[in-house]
Amino acid sequence: MTETALGFGIDIGGSGIKGAVVDMATGQLVGERATVATPQPATPAAIAHAVAQIVATCAWAGPVGIALPSVITGQIARTAANIDDSWVGLDVHELFTQALGGAPVSVLNDADAAGIAEVAFGDEAARNGAVIFLTFGTGIGSAFFSDGTLFPNTELGHMHIDGAEAEHFASSAARDREKLSFAEWATRVDTILHEYARLVNPSAFVVGGGISGVAEQWVPLLTVDVPVVPAALRNNAGIVGAAMAAHGHVAP
Image (tube, rainbow, N blue to C red):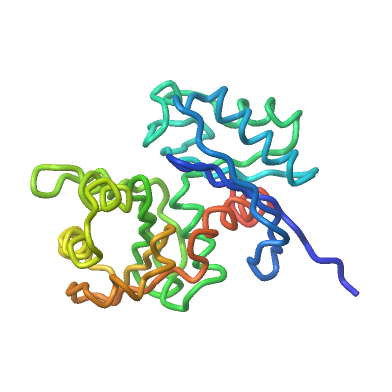
């Protein structure tokens, strides 16, 4: 019998950090997720400590993939979305390698991580044509795919629409903050999807993040003339994609 290949992924968000062991053949989590609140302020040292805490909690020894809300090029953080500005210009590979006692580490953009997991294990729509994957959480993350191939580090959540950044009025956090009904929030999401569709002409949108778990309450309310598919992996996609990166399916 072939031994199951396992990986480990950590998804760093603006409000929470979660990690788990992943079955690399199926994309399913093995055991329970470990979760801690994102430290405030979300400095590199504080988050690196939280990441090490999650790895220790899960008793994992091996490569670790980390999904970070930042543009990552050459393992350097170039932006800081919903984390502390001190991340900008930091060698994140060195930071997390030291925090994890020299364990092999791969770091990538959080939405890119979630997107590659959906391409590998999610709906067929994610693998065909020009696809925009969006995560709705503290902000709005985006990942672009052409027939399953990633164009990394896109930042549609920061596009200005009607004079404001898209994520400032259409993220899941904005819905919670302003106590919007699903109908009210779906109108805002619809506005940004229409603009994205006008500029990029995708064949499909795949929508993820925690709020995709109740997609039936808002996706049917959208009017954009492009298929909108809920992410199959829901809020675990970032963990799975990070684990894929560390396991060698994605170049660090």
